[in-house]
Image 1 (cartoon, rainbow, N blue to C red):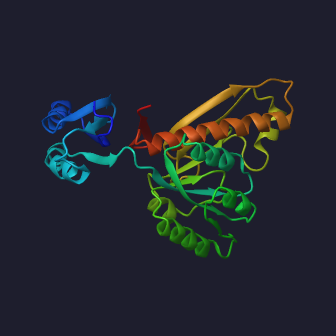
Image 2 (image 1 turned 60 degrees about the vertical axis):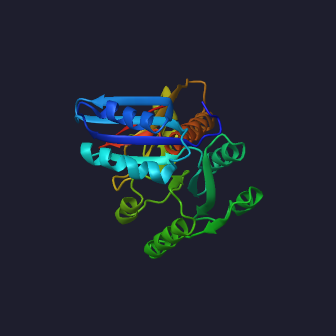
Length: 287
């Protein structure tokens, strides 16, 4: 395999039919596409087929634009929802945060050390607290206050910032504001949220303290796509950890925040690597 050849990822979903894999494979072989990673899933419940293929474009006559044009007839033939992208391009990303910064710190560190294949274009917060942190990483910071009366104006400014930085991914890293249905629709499939796993049981402030009172033995976190249904979007990743009676509320909170950070980072990484495909209210994740 030519290690200097462009690396490309093709993702697709369509009605499950005979001939999908053979047509895709033939298309790539005819253009000297060398497959180095491939995964597929047939969902009998929805009768949908899902596929992710990572390959190198060995033929200099076929760049990404040409390959997409050439693939279009096959996509039409099978009614595919599909995308073909440069696997080495880092996804333009904006992070939203409020007062709790554990997920923000974790994402910035992973991005700065090259672990996350994203390009953090800006940090947006309804509080000014993390402006110095953003500056220390050389990331633009936007303070967008949110009030009950000015919520619509704040969302308009948030959308302006997203468009200004051409963000393809918006990460709610403990951003404690409920987005409107309209904004959720505009960010559909490209906004990821994180929350503790106690919902819907322990809502509101200090959920880990509520869990302590109830003697909870498992804590965890859920990363999901943002939808108009609060905290109920398609789930990308979850994890849990056992706790015991010896842990006080502060210890539970620390364990919970660690899990939140890890789960969110995984979801962001898989999304940025084009490993997540929506399947109605669920997701297919090719890890």
